[in-house]
Amino acid sequence: DTAVSQTPKYLVTQMGNDKSIKCEQNLGHDTMYWYKQDSKKFLKIMFSYNNKELIINETVPNRFSPKSPDKAHLNLHINSLELGDSAVYFCASRDRTKETQYFGPGTRLLVL
Amino acid sequence: GENVEQHPSTLSVQEGDSAVIKCTYSDSASNYFPWYKQELGKGPQLIIDIRSNVGEKKDQRIAVTLNKTAKHFSLHITETQPEDSAVYFCAASSHGQNFVFGPGTRLSVLP
Image 1 (cartoon, rainbow over the protein chains, first blue to last red):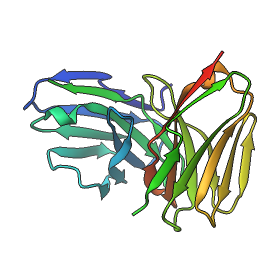
Image 2 (image 1 turned 135 degrees about the horizontal axis):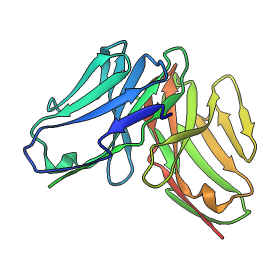
Image 3 (image 1 turned 120 degrees about the vertical axis):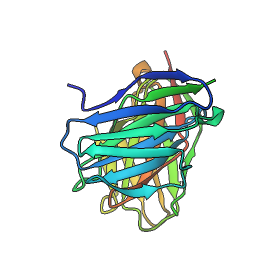
């Protein structure tokens, strides 16, 4: 069974559109993250949610909004998509009492 | 904030040789240092980690060393195999918060 899953795996869309990426973890973790990996492979944290509360927002544009309907899900909504948003977005989760993060398979977003 | 540097950016070794990747960090409060392997088209997978109260940790062909005084840690892979080819990332964290990743090392193991 997949521990951290993301949908969709690929997302191709036009500039200006609004899109969402979904993440689910079945590990019972209480902390979830969104990372962005650019074309040079740099991995940068965007958001962290702990028990449905945002605890990190690394100066991400407010066009990006994470939403956590429950502890097992952390979705990422992106409004007014721009060319520079093209990247791979990874979801990750962690048990708050341990440090290890588990990553999802990634969502490859291409904005045309 | 924390800054993590990683070298080299690319590394090619012959199958059977050893590979070493080095990272430095800036925040002395960091106490957890994981290493991730990312294969093409996949998410990063944890391969080994070390905490600041330990100087070295080994798991079969993989080992990590940590020098807290110098603020650097290294990944050592012995007897490399073609399936070790991937991008490797180091990271630093303080008590599991605020993970900062290095820029990655693309390792190629040549048969």
